[in-house]
Length: 311
Figure 1 (tube, one colour):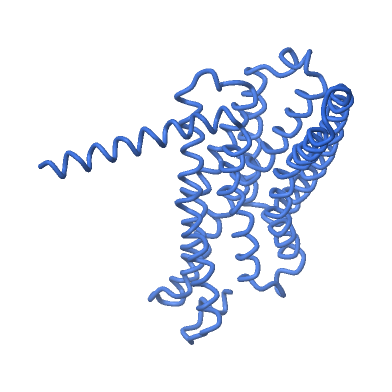
Figure 2 (tube, helix red, strand yellow; figure 1 turned 90 degrees about the vertical axis):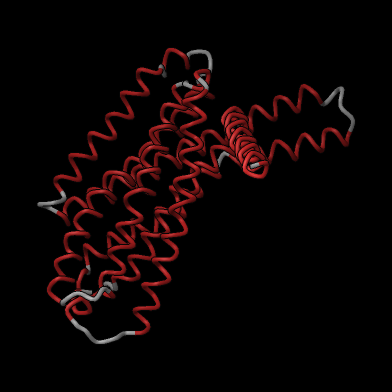
């Protein structure tokens, strides 16, 4: 990469790859910002939604929102640096400064996002497994402490990366693997609990339901049980490429194509755009609050258009 920055020679395949990756990042920005702003606005406007689970969800939305505001624009700037009309020395200097800023932001925000999603999976397991004791196990204050711990811990890791970049990247990869493992265990447990509950319901209703109704119940039970893995699957598909890229880059830095790493990072950033829509889709209360906000926005827009037309 530095060879390309220091050279003024044209490289069409490289330029094409840079432009494609930059366009993908640019498309993610409005999606990421809009989705997370809607989630935060829904919780802000509805005090009844401010439960321990939604406190964790808001922490996730803030980190994902900052990915859209900060990380993605910096990523685009880094990708386009080799194509800027600067001197080779200026390009190298700009690239290094932007890379340091991106590393700080990625460690801070993407780690917070991943760890918060893991905490949400544990919170859901506790709510299902210990539903009678859950209000005492997970309070709003404890949820805030958990979220604050994630943010503070990753600020320290981000600052340490300035001096020990490769070491901290390895630590981050280990943390990511641990989060994915914990999420796998908790979502597997959630799946088993949901299946068990559905079998109980099915057994209770078997005596009074017709065969068709029983079959429909069985199909719905499978769908609900399978849906518990949607969050984990999306997290897995988005974060594994980024973690593998970081691990390869640390181990074989001289032989790793920086553009391949950039594509893997873009896949990881997609998770920040996907998360809010998953939670809007799966959480009925948040979905209703978001739809209410959207209806108000649309009605206000229609009124403004009518007023402008009358004038």
